[in-house]
Amino acid sequence: MHGYDILVSMSDYGDGQFRFKQGTLYPLLYRLEREGWIKAKWHLPTKGKKRKMYNITAEGKRVHQQRCQQWQQFTSSVSSILGDYIDD
Image 1: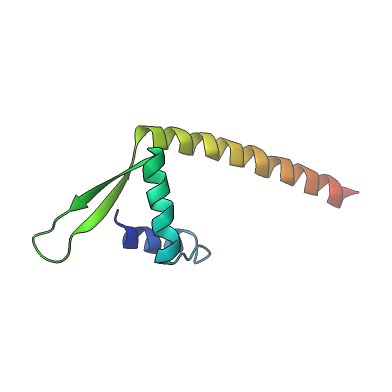
Image 2: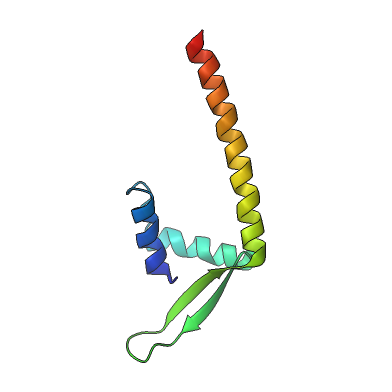
C-alpha cells in the first residue's frame, strides 16, 4: 500500500476511530522502515505521480505477531481485573 491508502484503510477498518494525519503517519512509516519491519519501494505508474509503496517484512510479521500476543495478554488481564472489581 502507499501512505494515503494506509490512512484510508485505518479509518475504514477502525470504524473511523483511527484517523491519522499525514504528519503523524509518515514519521511512523519511516521509523518502521528503519527498524526493518516494513520495506518501501518507489512505484512509477505510467500515468500520475510516483508513489512510495510499503510492504511488511518477515521480521515485521514476527514482531506484529509478538505484539498481538502481548496485547491479548494485556486485555485479558484488564478484563479480569474489571470483572473482579465489578463483581464485588
